[in-house]
Image 1 (tube, rainbow over the protein chains, first blue to last red):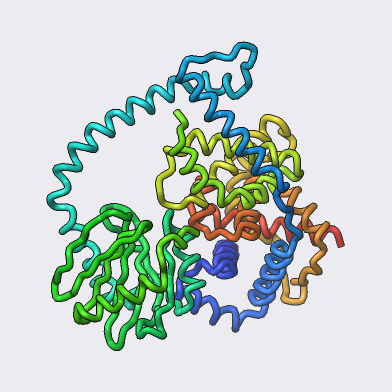
Image 2: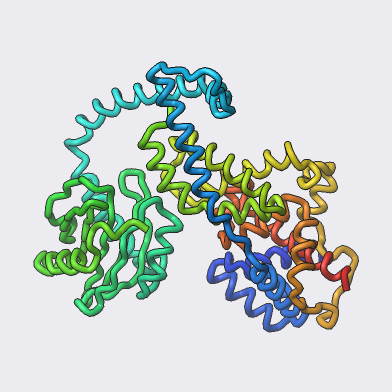
Length: 273
Length: 180
């Protein structure tokens, strides 16, 4: 069926132009592109269209819009607080008030849900705390081992920290600073996303001589004791933004050096995007 | 109920994407004052729903709200600007999304001409596209998002994102070709 083959080509061409084919499919498609003049011409046309659309002049947000929105939200916040203290201001029924009334039942529902979460949360936390630190350490080490077994220990390969950082930022709610420590003996290899405690977190991968070091960044305030799991040394420290867990098969003294260099290069407080 | 924490969350989650949100709203609505209204409403929705943020991708979450707000706002206030392929019957829809893109036309390499980028013409052609096609092209080219994020924002499978992009671009090519 010539027609359906054509449709499929069109989709392949689209995905190829957008960089969404995997390496194998892209390679195969490139061989076909080289052999097929019509396909090649359509590829060039599609790319020129994409460039033309991207080059369209872009509008900028009016400079005062953000301030107006902030003011609007302030009003909403104040309104809620006012209502809480039971002070009604007559003659000031804004549309915010009207909208708020409509969402009452939702608010009640949300409030009860929060209550439930607080109660069960505190009970669970106590129960959890016993096993959690160990679990975190072994999950981090598991991520490291999986990384070593995969064709490469990272999802994004780059020694350029300006590539790795935005890659994290586009995938994760919180992303760490990614310093390049090549001068200190730790070369940036790239980054990957690990899942620790059911949360996606950023892991930065460094190379030190023949050793690979994974630095996993967790929510701040966790304690992971220094230990050895499956032959890998684990060292952890925290700053105001993250709890860091470094894993590698290098001596623990070298991990201590790594901690010192990383902390010096990525001081807490500058980490927010 | 919204409190200070919600406000802080809002500032961290939605605020960084405000100018991108405005740009998306502007492309979907086609003018500045509608875009402002849409972004304002989206910001309030985001603030009220901030607890629903799933802690995965703040950008996609924020732009999803903007996109949904834009579509409902436009449907309500500018119904003529919103055209859905859902308005077609299933067979026609099938045809638009999956059918042969060149139909009976047989092209030779020489038929395939390059674009002379003419911003006004391209902008007009984009505005003429049915909403579903326009939004994926804007999200892809202007917001530069990948298929996965576009699929999340427009709430369709990745395969549909791909076919809509393909068809949308083909429509653009046809619209621009007609002008010459």
